[in-house]
Length: 466
Image (tube, rainbow, N blue to C red):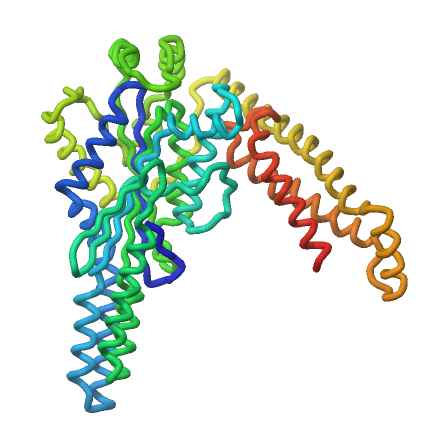
């Protein structure tokens, strides 16, 4: 359900639930069971998260309303009307709640990336993981700041609560067809509130306040992947530092991860029974098991505070429902008590490990410089094309410049050269650094090359027009 979060009175809570484990360990099965449980029985568990988070804000708002009431009592004779209006505000503050559930299945997104890039290379897992992060970032921030290759993700399911009851909309293949209907219903209700109270200006003002406070949004992102490297998980945890408890935007993002302990024998057994496109083979599972960095509660405080361990196996039937209910309670507890933890500096047990990490950092610098050099050549070519129009155009533009004494081309060249330096040193460098664990050579950035260069070219055109 798409709602404009730009209104400061609309509160958005974003919950990241990260699933960790080998392929075919039950993560997707668990995700589907969890969504089914929320749909049929337990939307209240998620609604409580909105209510709990609103307590402090509501208390502050109520205190302000009481102060305003006292002032009004001293200055006018409309005490009853004002008190009634304030009571209406308090009663209706949480009437409309929107819960969006995003089940992000990396396997399916990987296939979409393959189709987009027209190849089936395993190297496409790198842009797949960049894509998921950028998509979530844009949704949480309600922006298009990050480059994405696919259409913006839509909720798998949305629950919309208002006075008249519950409306449910579902996404098929990421397309939510009910968004406009839900938004129209909300607008109609707001208009009816305003029309019924036209006789009193105070009532109108209070109804407008109600409309602003009506929508409290909760986004639950279920990240259904293996997440075998710590850096893959920590990248999402870092999002909490950008948005949590932002008083101005009233946005909040919280993190929790569930680790499904590795059982390579069982994983391979179940995996070989699965009939899915692009299924992984035993060799890849074994390799992933060797590389797997399990949550380390002794060394990483951020994982210690935010990790649940799933130590029970699934029976893959209805008897699993009670188990999923218990896990949902634990998830809710973790989200309710979420605490941001500073990532302490890595302590090295031996010099060899330190030298290994230093080499990785040096390799990243070499990669960044190599990519910047390649893009510098592309940017020079773009500037050259912009500075060399056709001979006819060039002749007429030259006459026009001479007659009106406008800026010569040399000035444009200097302006575009400065823009190129900013693009290479800031925009491109930031993109590489943010995705350094996936961009290890020039070929890794090729899926984003066209968009990055188009952005650069559009920036050049803006400079010329201005």
